[in-house]
Image (cartoon, rainbow, N blue to C red; front, side):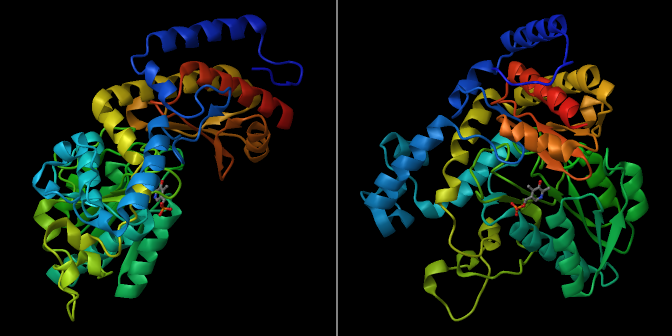
Length: 444
Ligand SMILES: *Cc1c(COP(=O)(O)O)cnc(C)c1O
């Protein structure tokens, strides 16, 4: 790839050595061949933003086209029910084997179970795909808040950190205002995140709910979810985990770590496409105790009874509200199948190797220009992205985008390098960081 660079760049021999290193890492990478399954992998574009919007798999393009033609176009309204010919009696694998698609009505639960298996360590019947992350956070945090207050009227606080994603903070403030509760803010170092020590100071007999991100969107800090869950439970509180930057990137064991509730995005590492619906996890033990605040017909005990008043369905269906967004649920199925095939542990191993490589390149190539690393240096405390900090990063980002090198920018001065293990190569990572070096030199 040729890019115009200002004079005084990285020495030729250094580039040659780094290229040899990247190529050796790619050769040794067991996930290497999957990169070609993604649209655009054949181009020179460097994609560092799969943590905000994952690339599509080629299989998803075919799935979307076939769906529009055969399912939507062919089955029309019948698609909501089982295909004719007694196929409801067949298992979903048998139906797929016969080229019949699922009843659309079952997709939120079938894909939810696949997310549980592939990505979040949840046994079947606890995960559903539904609304946006924002709406699901509202539904689950409010349901948990109401259940906590019903159990003990003194539990009026929702604990959240000041560096959590904006939607998480806004939702918590809204619920506190709506229900007469209070927000307990945890101050964190923006290059790290919520630690056990910080959470212990924040929770107590006044805590109703704790809402935390497993991987911090800004720094990439990976929270110690099992320990923090135990701390919340020891204080008698519910905990809601935001898994937006974890699902498909770092292992999660929702059941084994004793999660209460969780929500996560599907358009990031699960490659569901722009605005694809989020998932909600509710531990079996809590499902029938919680009542969510948007009582729509799809969550009612008997959907087509069209009854005079709402009674919540048993199990996960009570967490749905309106008609499931089926088109948005299509593409993520291909990534979930791929994750099940390769295993989340292999993905995490490559993720660590990629972020370690990026940190090392940043130290070698960017630190001399005053760039610092605003992410944990310890891979065990880091998710799938690395944030590089410098006052000129907003302009650097614009310059990079114009050259088809696509990271993203987050204030203050943070260039986020997102490294999706299934679609990113080490050579691409090197190429991109060399471009960052040239852009910093040009803009600083
Ligand atoms: C991406 C992200 C969201 C996005 O919420 P939407 O409702 O899908 O816009 C929420 N929380 C976190 C932590 C995120 O990273």
